[in-house]
Image (cartoon, rainbow, N blue to C red; front, side, top):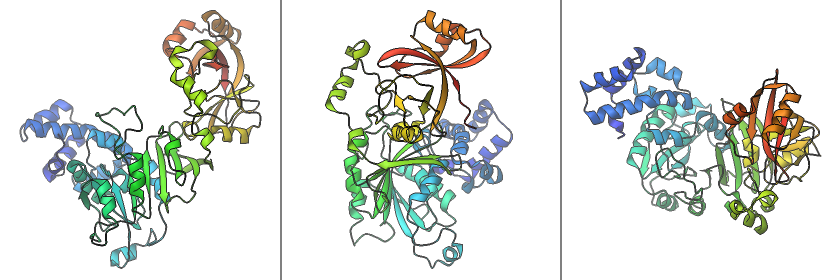
Amino acid sequence: MFDAELLTSEQVLKFIKNAFSKKMDALQISTALAKEYSNEQRVSIMDYMALIPKIREKFSTEKAFEKNAAENESLLICDKLALEQSTAKDIGQWKANLWPATGIAADNEIEFAAGTATKITVHDLCCGMGGDSFYLPKNLDVVGVDLDENRLAMYRHNTKVMRGTFCEKAGTTILGDVREIAKSNDSADESENTRADYFTIDPARRAVDGENQRDLRNLTPTLDEVVEIARHYKGGMAKLPPGYPVGEIPDECEIVYVGGHSDCRECLVLFGELARNPATMRAVMVDKNGEEIAKWSRKRDKDFEILDDELQQKLNHNDQLEGRDRTYRTSSSKSDLPIGKIADYISEPAALLVRSRLFGQAATEASPDAHLISEGIAYVASSSPMPAPGFASFKVLDHCEISTGAVRAMLKKHDIGKLTLKLRGVKVDPDAEIKRLKPKGKNPGILFYTRMAGEKVAILTQGVNHG
């Protein structure tokens, strides 16, 4: 059971600092806590202590912890689920660029100190532990809104830690239904302390601790309700699961997929004044410091967001089909690339490009002959390698049918020993398959098990050094 008052007490913080400095193990911590605290309190403290390394990693608070671990300002508090759902530092820092630059300049500390500046206010709806508030620009004040008092307790403490030196409303919260709070935002009777110009929202999408909802539409509030909430503000942003059906998002919104080299972590839907490029789809790759590495964009096209009836029917009956009639897919929508044969190179688009449906455009811009080798499988074939960081490219050495004898013969022909196996459209256990193939050569190789025109194919490649 999460206990905010307990976890932020001076006595507990002092104990936590001492336990980490002495590198106490779980048994030592439990024994020491048993002398002062009830079993329920001990469990709460130990559960929280187990999260501290993950909190440090997600929000890069290691230095602050080391310097001032006994002070309230040094530690963020949360439970496991709140931590999992919260926006990490790298994404949060990049998202700060999406907010309006009007009002106070971010570095105008003199006006902040003098109290002479007028700030813009943001409602952090479904605020959780506060991750979407931590890195807002300094010209923005923020108020957390949630139905869960435990989450609000986390939010009050954490925003004071992260924004307390310059945010007048740091730690300000409202207990209530975000849909009703949004409606009341229009009222002239509302207190200036609770009204807001903009909003950010992360709808709840997990019913069980640590488990994602399979139905991506099962959000609270729903997307339709978020659209209605947006009508009560000048603008705002909603954080959706990356796999949310993009065709359901209103045309006037701007959609931004954000992630790193190997992941796509958020689908941001921008409303009102924050949608500076309406009806546009963007993908942005950031580094660990929140700096933009690469970006891609295009105008939205419903033809590639919603599957046609024929293809949707195939997908609905996929398990009943065999061989060439079966549609194997690893992308969630149609592609604008044609279908062709295996070429000199095969490239794997970054997750961001696949999720945002932008890999086809990016591939064609890099190589006009770019194409897929099977419907719905996001491997791009071309006569030249695709550029990093949007793609990982591989030089094709050979290919054959997926059968033990044929694949072993191909590996022997190219003297392959160390083997990496990549899968799309074929289900096997990679480690078990490599053991079964028993490669014994001197050269490294990367083996793709995938589909060509719907049929299983093994493609042997070597990685391309992009320099």
